[in-house]
Amino acid sequence: MNCFKLAHVATALLLLSPIAAQAQSAAAAPAPATSANVAADYQIGPGDELQVFVWKNPDLSVTLPVRPDGKISTPLVVDMQAQGKTTTALAADLRAALSKYVQDPVVTVLVRTVATATGNAASIRVIGAAATPKTVPYRAGLTVLDVMIDVGGLNTYAAGNDAQIIRTQNGVSRGIPVHLADLMKSGDMKANVQLMPGDVVRIPERWF
Image 1 (cartoon, rainbow, N blue to C red):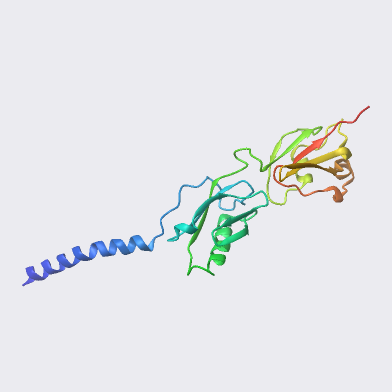
Image 2 (cartoon, rainbow, N blue to C red):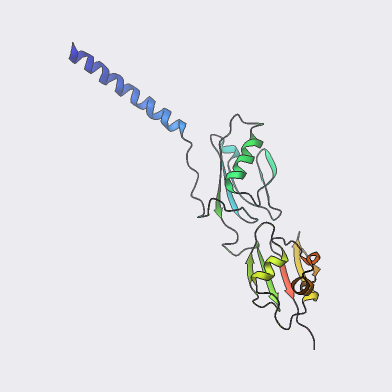
């Protein structure tokens, strides 16, 4: 009798094992593709490539770049601000937006590639009469004062008040005057212009 009971229990366990394994598999969302090696508090910037993964909704899962205006558009969510957010914060915002259409969406956001790491248009270039002309990685809220501190200020021969920010939008470039000498030497914060991804700060030299 005991042998019969043991055999019955063993058979039941064998039958339940596939069901339990299937339930465990369904409970865990599959992991998206490997992301770039970024810190948890990394703030997303223009040009970064993101992977938006919505569990059990492949039609809503996309890989896309952050636009120059700092926004992304995914299926059902148009013009979501991404710049300046962490992946966790962006995932929460997308989850809230998708909740209007999907019941209890599970959203994961990963940074696949970082724009500034590849040297693309998300950087600021400083050319001309800076102490150390170079390319400065863009970040949200970056101003011309931040960049000038990074490059060591103006050199001895700089015509700082004749400087320009060269900005290209929709394929058209324009020059924005910026009084760097007033900003750096007199602390005139009216000259502290906020920069956009891809801006070029051009500093001419004085004519003697």
